[in-house]
Amino acid sequence: MKRLLVCLAMLAPLGFAADEAAGSDEAVQQLAKVRRIYIRILTGGDAALQIRDLLMTSLQSTKQFIITEDEEKADAVLKGAGDDQVFNETHQSSDSINAHTQIGGGVNGSTKTNSGVRYAGVTIGENESRHTQERKHEAMVTVRLVNHDGDVIWSGTAESQGGKFLGASADVADKIARDLAADYKNARKLADSHRP
Image 1 (cartoon, helix red, strand yellow):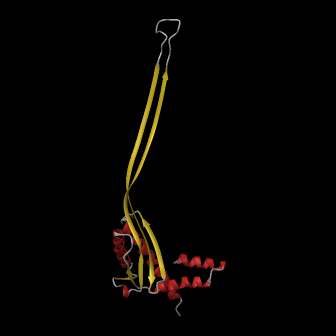
Image 2 (cartoon, rainbow, N blue to C red):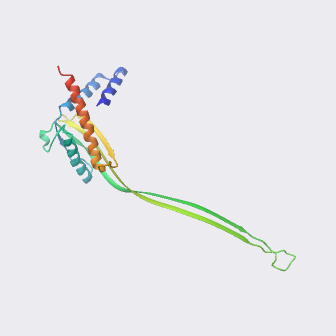
Image 3 (cartoon, rainbow, N blue to C red):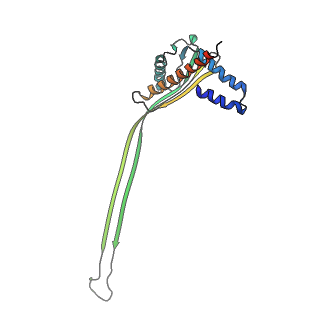
């Protein structure tokens, strides 16, 4: 939210449209009024269902919002998509060194003996192959908070390969919850500072 306000302050001298700035200010005011949130089923299959549940837990644990299962009672709806994938990343490399040398000889035409024939040969070879396989786990979620009029009042995206103590899905849910809670607190402070 601070970044948004700083951007708006920087764009104002450049002739940024006043109605666009007012729209952003209105979104901040709308966010400050949100107390009860309904989290809609995210697109993205089974992984998205798990991320939705993790978002509910993470947002509830911020103690900033009431998470409701009844969309009609919500001040705003969190919508979006999520994905969680586990895959193997394979790396393969090969190094090789080879050298071949061959020397020959012949028979002297004036002698009838084979004493003039000489041969030599050298072969050197080395081959090294490496094959590694690494298991990776990545999760991504992108969400938007929408009011009853259908206006987007907040949005966020998070990606993770897993945290120190959290899996990838739990980590992205935690990042979204922290970002939304921080922006909500800033919106509330801004709204409180504008009250008479």
